[in-house]
Image (cartoon, rainbow, N blue to C red; front, top):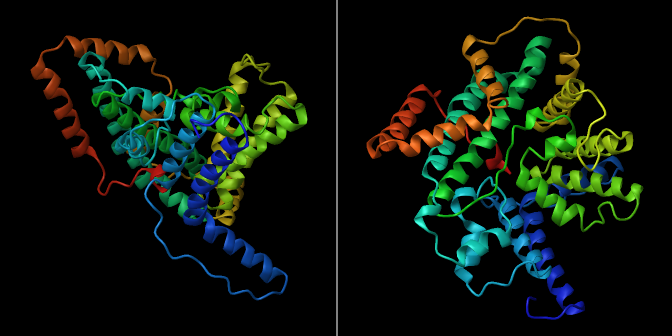
Amino acid sequence: MGSLPDGRQRKLLLWLGVAGNLALLGVFKYFNFFVANFSNLLSSLGIDANLPFLEVALPVAISFITFHALSYLIDVYRRELQPTKSLVDILLYISFFPHLVAGPIVRAKDFLTQTARRSEPESIRLAFAVFLILGGLFKKVIVANYLSTDYVDAIFQNPTAYSSADLWFAMYGYALQIYCDFSAYTDIAIGVTNLLGYRFPQNFNQPYRATSVQDFWRRWHITLSAWLRDYLYKPLGGSHHGVVWTYVALMLTMLLGGLWHGASWNFVIWGAMHGAALVAERMLGLTGKDGSRRLPPVIAWLITFHFVCFAWIFFRSQTFGSALDYFRVMFSFESFALTMTPLVALMFVFGALTQIIPDSVQERAEAWYDRTSIALKIALPVVVIWLIAAASPDGVPPFIYFQF
């Protein structure tokens, strides 16, 4: 494809490559979902159809592998990247272990250009990597895990057994849990990658400070947002075909983004909510191309934060019915008894601090670490990792994004 001139042959090769990758993803991840829904539709029409289901294991990281393969194909097609002559480099890009299971999603042009040259030891930012890894371990093993095991999981599993107050706090708790869990993984991945001589892009930027849903997606899973924008929203036409089509493209992008997270109607609803919010913001003029806002910042933040939290309820709930039960009890205001322990309350504080601590704090810590002796450089991470392991709850839950 890279050696062909622009024309039908080149476009055909692109579509064959895209279709082949999406077919693998569709078979393994979505086949049973669509078969089950089609079977239910036939049953509602009085047709008894015994449709076959696939009994196969979902390949590890198939969603992220597919995104990387598509990025390479599309970047070559757009002539933003010269096709590599090395099969090893392609396999390294697609299966690079630090970010294989849960991202960040790295563009082919950004990664493969780094394989074309030797890394210099001076490019490895030791302090930056160490603090990212240690901070990620703390967020995941301590904050996210205690929120999960000691509070959030039990309430989401049986929302009707708890008070309205518990459900409100569990919603906030899950918002902090999924942030601390997912951002921890990508922080560790970026840190490990840097130690290996590669640079990965930032994936989170204190998303719960966002004052619009558009701003939230500029801060949350930044690499996915950019991927959906450049490889889906813009090819759909983006904002170049009138206002109505812009809204359609936004909705389609977010619906498919929701479905990418898993074969469940709850993920589709979650994506639809974010798509509708992005459309509403544009229709009401609440955000502009320059990011300007017409609401007072505090009001805009309150609305955005609670919208994101309400959408997380569909994301976290196992079924649509359990999500509706959650909302019903949460807004009943029948009981305000709290089962939250002081330890869980402390995790709320730690989680909230991740959204307000300025970058300058880590920059000063990195500058101090760079000046310390080699003995302290070794001792600090060893001691911190031992303390985190000692303070962690029994049975560490897997990273949330491992399931995607």
